[in-house]
Image 1 (spheres, rainbow, N blue to C red):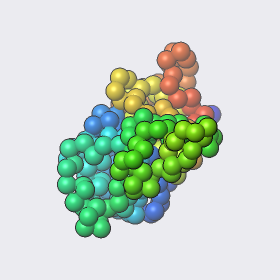
Image 2: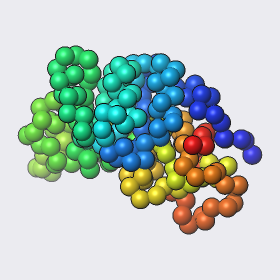
Image 3: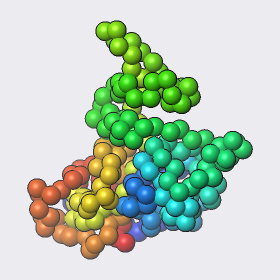
Amino acid sequence: MKNKIVLPGEAVSRIKDGDTLMVGGLYSLGEPQILIDEIIRQGIKDLTVINVVLGKPDSALGRLIYSGNVKKLIVSFCGYMTDLPELEKEGKLEIELNPEGTFAERVRAGGFGLGGVLTPTGLGTYIEEKGIGQRVTINGEDFLYHTPLNANVTLVQAYAADEAGNLVFHGTQKNVCDMMCFASRTVIASVATPIKRAGELDPDNIHVPGAFVDMLVQE
């Protein structure tokens, strides 16, 4: 069995300038802080970051955004980072807002090979005005069509994992992290508790099979 447990520097070296990253975390809960801080340390830039709900400016993702290494955010809510719209006006950051349900379904579509999402949510609003969704009419009803979301790399924090890469999330830590792990070419997970030997996790409690996980970093 391939050894998937690596140091943060080796894991993050898989990320290149200009990559698109899916990053776990809901109001900072479940952020893979050790991996994000390593991205900042390595100075990887021009990143597109996909995250459902941002937290505070001093959170790991906040530090990454304010480091200037992120060129675009795809989110459903900016959390406590209330000055981000001003950064967009100044041309320092591009922000694409999605309703939270739409965001989750776009990630799911990307992970499971679906052609996109049709939803009436956002019709006649900022979402349509900004061209985030495209209006289509089917059987006399209007919808917004959204493309799937995919990424080069997904970064998540798992509560538990085994050496085979099987992941278990706890509570709010899960959010859409499980779906994100299916929507990227490479998946890297930081693990909050000691990584177990293969077979020690209860199979009924595994949220992401190890076949989808490339590297583990022990926190």
